[in-house]
Amino acid sequence: MSFLRRVSGLSLRDIGSVLKKDADSRDFGFSVSDGLLEKGVYVNMIRPDGPADQAGLRPYDRILQVNHVRTRDFDCCLAVPLMAEAGDHLQLVISRNPLIQAPLWPLKDGPQPADTLTTLPVHSPKTADL
Image 1 (cartoon, rainbow, N blue to C red):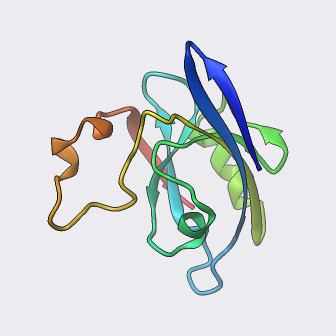
Image 2: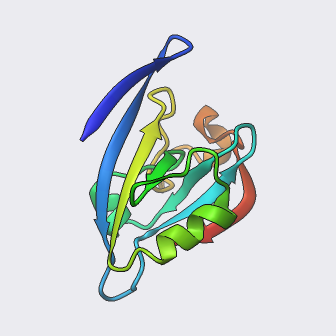
């Protein structure tokens, strides 16, 4: 499910996803961090081929809702327990800024994260793996 909205002249995309916990690792295959410049919880890293990767989550996606609970103004301390209590399925609504085209994983022969504009620090060092 996908919704478009306009904020300050930019089209942001709200996307709904349902993730199924990986049976082997018993996680959803992503980590989150608090916003640095703007309040909220953001996807930090994605494990390749994990549930989050397969569902299409990307680094810098903002988590707006977890299992029908609005998390727009939450920080990790409030959002992570919601995700941990989700059981084997996690229903998310995320917002994706189309201007941020973050690589899913660092490229071996390509530019390193410090060399690209899209990896400017927008998250605090406080993170949680899910």
